[in-house]
Image (cartoon, rainbow, N blue to C red; front, side, top):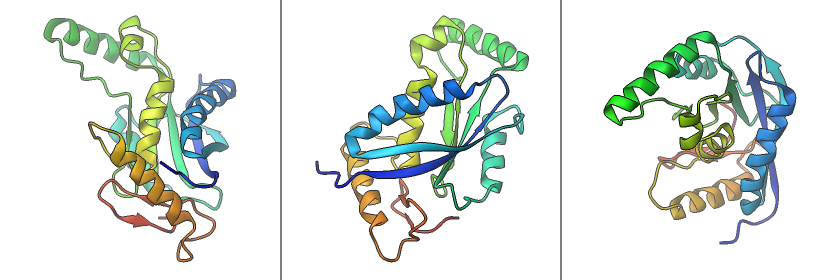
Length: 193
């Protein structure tokens, strides 16, 4: 598939204490390896450290939905760290997994209204967690959602969505200071919301 000319989009990054700027750079470097397949580059801008707005991922998404996309931000990404409460919760979830075989831990999410805000768990520790995923692979997965892709068995639909999004960036009706999005349900997001 032809993904056209190279495009860059800016991701305002919020990170919890315990996550270093070097780790953020490593995450974005890994994500950009994947994005290079589509002639895209994600740039982390305005990295801002803050305490988590709530324990669960839903609290993070609710918080992100209150943030406007500023002049510098095409997307907002929250990097969730690791607290003592997280370790207790992870222990409980791993125990549940060992008994039931069902893995219920969530490593990231993207809001579904505009698909421009999301979070990932940027700190893992247990071997079982790392067997299933990693912060880098979680960012790649959630990064596809930040580009409008839904959950699908085959990636062709996602590739078409990325093509559509890149074409929308050249649409004269699209805000020139915004890298647009086409959501999983087909809505065109041409200006910051």
